[in-house]
Length: 624
Image 1 (cartoon, rainbow, N blue to C red):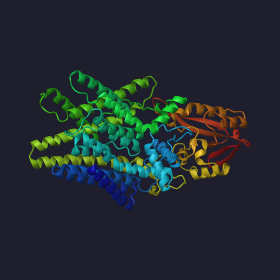
Image 2: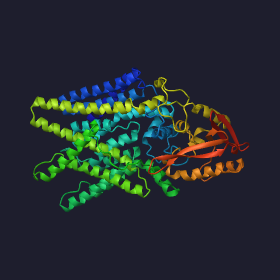
Image 3: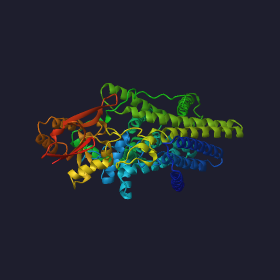
Image 4: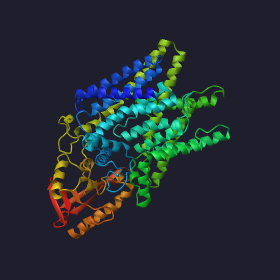
């Protein structure tokens, strides 16, 4: 425990030091020269550090492993700070899923209660831990919720390899654990989705420990309550990957039944499984209890699952032309080698990686089964977001490749001359670290996620310093570059309805920047897949269509004031001629989403039932 605390402290100090140094450089990744400098410096630094640690590792393996994790944390922090230096936004700004994640931070900056980030009066549906943390950081520091997304994302980048290392260490020992933690964090990086990133990198080693009892020789079996606490915390962070690993658990329990019939003890006895599950449910209860009760008491839908991509249920094959693809192909070779040894070796011949390879093979089977089930359910018009399983599949194959590479290096050390073995180890480890770092530097620190964050306009209309005059890489959904900023829209609203608290305001609008940065409640979500299951998105849209069809303002006012869903205080709509339009996205399952709209006659919002102010091409309407 003491060593783990010291390693964590070293990671924090290294990450803080690196963040300060990078910030002092005023990196601007919108400039081509800076992009080249970031990619080269990160790749070369990672390659050299990895080579040094590979050479020094055999003498002090535990120290070298700890140092590798500290270096990994510092590296990811440096890349995050470099990519986001010059902007207050997190990765991707307000593009796609970053919009609702920013909206969640804005909501939890306004309240500490675990409520839905969109609709008023509903409990949280999405696991709230990261958004809640961002909101609490904003509240404590006096910054807007949307501006707290970036520092939390940077902090998560620093701790991901540390958390994964703590779990992998119990499974495979320090040297391989460090390689697995750092390389999977790099090659399977999702810094714009810190909740998914944390769970993706930590759930697999947890599953191997809890379900397959894979651990280093002599390591004590983790207590059931401790495994339950870890699982409960992960459930508070993100839940999707529990589906494929849940199917893998069913396969593992089946394997235990076969083992029991052959006289071998099961790896996960039923009482232990129940104990782990009970503790996990208790720890995560602040989140799931409210969601379950709402499901039982209120009408609900499944729009949140009705998103798919063409071909998303097909496993993405590793590309031999990419470094990560070669590692994954190596992982498949290692699994095949382990299976061959299991069939060919004598009963008394130890198989060091047998249980580990078997556990990872079961996890892969669970992931493939999920993709297969997703394909079948898609034909039945049922969505389960199965395409997300490819992220888990990638991590599992990368992990297998890293383990296969470590086994190959161990073989070289035992069979080749010492100098040859050391050179081979240095080259192999340095190449893997350099390639993985290059991936993050190109795809994230200098890629589209950073450039969007650098060029997305702030709510007050200013552009980030890092934009350097560059036009927005991607426009905010339903918002044009020259539209009046959020502050102008709010100023118009405050003139119409002075004194109404933001957190008590319900608006019919799809201005994504307004909903993401101001703690008002939308009457509808701007995408159906972001709607709470009990929000009844379709019914709310039908109500708005009824409003649009009203013969007079009195009818429209009555429907907006008195309906089964929520009282509407106002509307912020696009104006074109004599029409006001609400745009939104609905599922086009199984092919992503499509645009729809509700068009209101402008004269429907007339006094004395309504009051209206025009701001640019937008109309702000207050319901009296």
